[in-house]
Image (tube, rainbow over all chains, first blue to last red; front, side, top):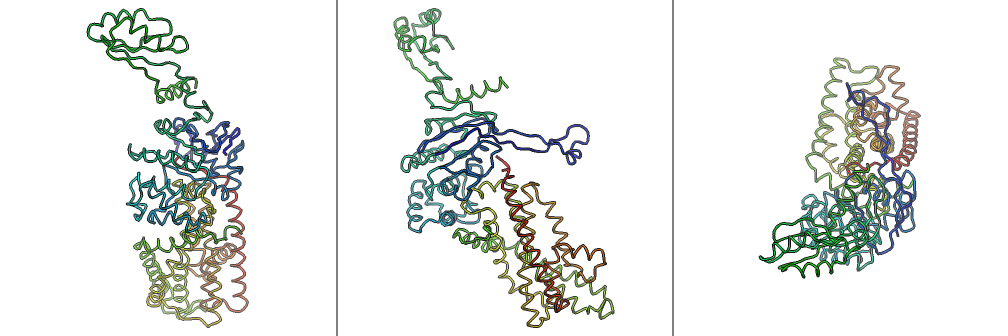
Length: 334
Length: 268
């Protein structure tokens, strides 16, 4: 459905001059500098997938999306979206894709939401019957009934974002690009948008590429993620694989009953290979287990044989921590 | 030219939105009317002072002069350079990103909106025309001249629209069009002959004006109305306007095809 091959985008800008009278000299300089926003990105996305496209600020996520949607022309490399080169066929490509830019709206400020959606329906040459049916469906799914007649400039951010989502899907495009669709929203509004994306994907088999900084979006929606930084792909694979590769350990938290403090201290001193202590404080200890070296169940069995356990739990490392580690590791190699 | 294909039903909606927008920002519109009257009164006062006791200067009677200034006022109400501002704002705020993922081209959306804005303003002609007759003079031309003036008006509108479209598109290179807008704004009022008719301009300046497209916006149509241009001069004026409309149309098409490869979206 979507294919990017060795995609590169270089922006040039006038290099600011430093030193005395720098502002005035910048006005007359002819020195340009090139900034490589996307540096050889390749991936393929199949029909019906929901893919999370992640990376720190300035990693090149939005630039990639803008090349996939036909707004920007790549410096080199190839893009194909539904078998079209987006920037060469902007108007035809537009019929295949729905786009939400969380940071700006595609609705018309002066028009009530319903009129804005109607205008979009007409632009995409929908029949009146199709438009009506989809409007009714979306109004219910996104709970827009109460603000359908409100001018867009008066909508709250959460309402506006729902309106923008409706605008992106009302003409039933097979592909959806969502650039930070939950940015700045409260928990309830985020949840509603996630449920909606899930539903559209399930009902219409819509292919979704999603950029976000909210990893709850990713955990909830994406089975596959692509992480980029400095314009290059760092990781492309399933979320389970990400955890396996970057966070192979499990955390075991043990709490003992009152008379087990000493037994716990002793047990912590004599841990088997593949288990490390992260924290130990009287009645509580946190152990890091590497499952490749020792089974988590063996560790639990070993501990419970030695100490009176009040509570024990096993945690998977959270996505947030993993991603942070990947970004930070990248910083170091810079 | 693809950009002129306004058949997409969404474009008709954008046009209608343009019409309505004129009245959503009512004060802005009314101030535009006041500006037309104000400029006419100022220019009239200056020119009457210049004429002093004389009835005519260089064979131009004061009455013709006042009518000329009034017609220019009318032209400048009908022809309004909104499109450059609209495009400039969209580039500056990065809104072009949204405009470019639509199934109708960016330039066509902008043209539809601009035509809607214009049509909305033209409704106010019912106030502007009587007002101009009070503050100036619109002594009607002969039926023949009136007809030719209408043709000239359409061409003037086209030339102006294309000039301001080009100014707007320059934003794809400059990012901020305000400097360009100021420069062209000055040129298009002075070099168009809005303040001083070209017939009073000194030789070298006159040559410059003759070689630039701006006279097509004010001077050429207004001189047809006041019948300073007669006979073959009228046809020459219309021919010049047509020439500039075609040249600028070709230029705009070319510039747009280059601009599309230069799109930079501001603000992420």
